[in-house]
Length: 539
Ligand SMILES: CCCCCCCCCCCCC/C=C/[C@@H](O)[C@H](COP(=O)(O)O)NC(=O)CCCCC
Ligand SMILES: Nc1ncnc2c1ncn2[C@@H]1O[C@H](COP(=O)(O)OP(=O)(O)O)[C@@H](O)[C@H]1O
Ligand SMILES: [Ca+2]
Image (cartoon, rainbow, N blue to C red):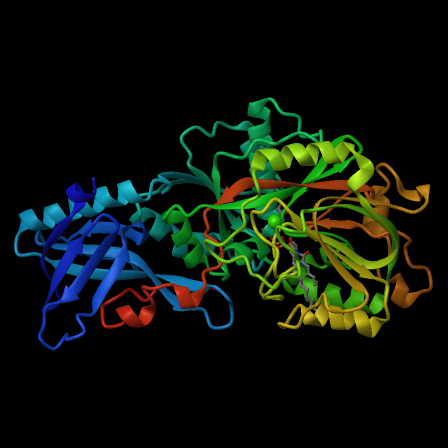
């Protein structure tokens, strides 16, 4: 196959002649010029070619094709530093090549397209796209149609687009409608919208496999469809933690090339019923209160979290609780080992099957559980780092996306300045766990209960959920005795819960955060070439 795909010839870019070579994995072109003593070569991995078009083609500001019969245009991924974020921005590079003959031009386009098919088997052909028109700054539709759709079209991806008209429409669609022919599902929105897609796909997969999601000990079936996230929400934590930047173009390009990043998922149960799934944050106390407060100020958009965060901080609350956790194997990794889960370096669960089996057994066997009881500022569990623009290293900077474990962060009751220090460290590189009132544990499962029997079962009435005066610690003396759980931006209707981590239950069109120092094809290398400047003016 390698030899079949090899092609080599002279090609022109503008008035300069190049030696172009297509090997199995790379498309390279080197200027044939005595002055080019370093033999500087542009090398694009075939897997990062976005599209190949006959003629001289532009796609922005709108598509234009000059249909000359000796030219072809190659679109590919170019990287640049994102200034601020940890990941790299991806942009669309474009080079227009001229051939001495039409026959050679056709040979190049045919070989490049065949190489693409051979070396990127996971590229999607057909996608189901859900747009939440009300997420974040309400720009979901515009982001999709102006920045993402032209790229999908260029890559030959056909999309069925649904602009949602109500909450949970995407989840219900995925649970009930025919999904035949789709390679993946794209969510244009924030973490709440992603959570809908997650529930729809996990639920559908278990239904089809005949598995009972309500049983916390069951080994769930991984979802066959990939999920793509085009960030257009408020926190956009799942996107940030798996791509490294909040940028619709970068995310669209990860979808196009068919990247595949497995992701751990927590299943939250109450008694013998599934309550919710979680990937980014299952948080009681501070994060639960912030969410409950912020829901009253949705009109503020993403700023609602800043406002509510300040108000809840000022209310200075802590809550009594009993936390039990099932520790993960400390020999494999630790949340304080100062590693970072970067692209290509994620830890594999020792073996998905044996992990699930041992986890199922230990869920029944109480022996290995550790129990702590007291008053907490917050209890948080995350399956990944949960980095986001507010906290570039995240809730747990050394957590792994796909190792089958979660990180449990216990912040014991402390004085207000201590808690502020803890929160503030999330915004810098200072270690938020290096504080005497903070503990972090790598776990496979967590249980939470209240010290007395005041809050078992469906313990929050609708009235309590919506009218509890969340700022009463600030404005009057009677603070609520229980908080709520924030589960990826949803308030859970239960206080006493069990959460179990399922390794690699879903796959995203992403590859983890790229280490800028380790990648080639950087922008400097390509700057001498014509390229499409494709900036996101919407952020
Ligand atoms: C003094 C400075 C304090 C700064 C504190 C920063 C701590 C930030 C940690 C954020 C972790 C975010 C985890 C992700 C949670 C999302 O699932 C959830 C829903 O997102 P979306 O659907 O996009 O609205 N977001 C939140 O719960 C927001 C938490 C904000 C807390 C201040
Ligand atoms: N058309 C719609 N109308 C109202 N709510 C919706 C709609 N579509 C999705 N939602 C819900 O909106 C919530 C927030 O969406 P999300 O895209 O995460 O935005 P944000 O990040 O601003 O919270 C999600 O829980 C989702 O279920
Ligand atoms: Ca994990």
